[in-house]
Image 1 (cartoon, one colour):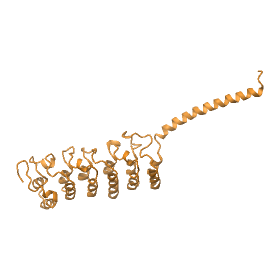
Image 2: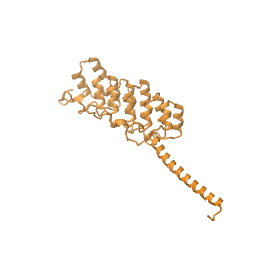
Image 3: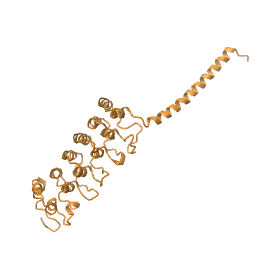
Image 4: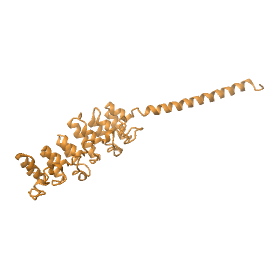
Length: 276
């Protein structure tokens, strides 16, 4: 009561200001927490540019070194919204070939090139299985991914096939198989077996696809593997020539096989019964 009136008013004003500051701080905390929840499901600038088909912005952001995953994504989580890396989104975008070509130039490409997204598919798997892609776009995308270090070894969600099996069995465009055979460590996967104990060249034989057989043979595929179901289906083993003679009544196909240099090296090989 003895304090001057002006001093008491000043103290009340300071108290009110402190209360306001505390309320503002509390509201800011609430806002920040709410914004964090929103940000989990919002698009990053790179994600937005890809979805809008803005190639110039994508190239600019990649050149600036922005990450190729959503800031709140976790690699390998299978969270389809964030797609565990924007390569998946690029493949599904309006301009897939251009977007993938831009993204593989990123210094962070190694972080996402072989990451498993939904259904344990890698970006290379996703591209090969996307039937909506044009032939020309698929060639460009597969070329870009392989050149950037895409692994050929992870199994696809179809019959435990590698990408070589899939290309030999299910993709008509022989250029795709040719590109895949340029991949790193191709010798480690070229004779792997799928769920049905078939190798890629065994599947090409079943299709009588001479171009694919020639490509795989030239790349070092085994022509005498006793494990291949297609070569051992008659329970005598042998080479792909034994299989062609006993399975196909097709002289033209057999003559085409004999034109393959690597096949000539096994022309006198014997099967389990000692037969050429």
